Image 1 (cartoon, helix red, strand yellow):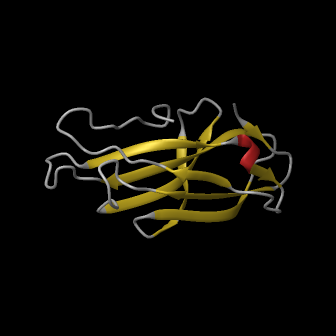
Image 2: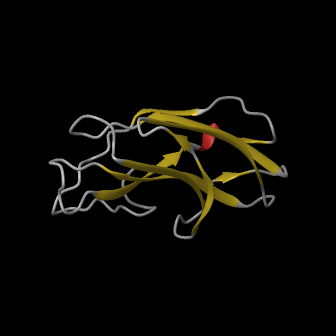
Image 3: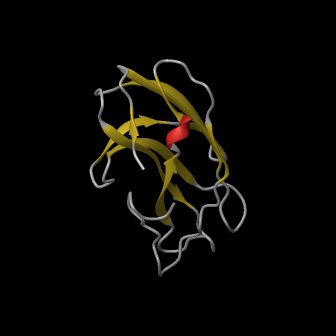
Length: 136
């Protein structure tokens, strides 16, 4: 699905908690919002969320190209080393921001609450790089 707004701006908000699957907080956490075209192949950085290594939160009003079909996604880059000092701990995953949580216009009605987003641990196999079309 893709969102389409006829207004000049759209508004969204996101929150979530990000524990490592093996317990504890990640050593590094970077959560950004990317705007993708309707196909999901072409994405560009929109914003970086606030985070404290345990959770993230962000809300914004962004400029819109009228009648453009788009998707918003969270790009979560993190380090969960289980066991510690594993050679490949850096990972990334994408989560779609639901279309009904993106509001056309400048008024934020409700936020996309992701709840607990368990961050899989880094291993020697399966780096977990899902890309924009990968893991949901």
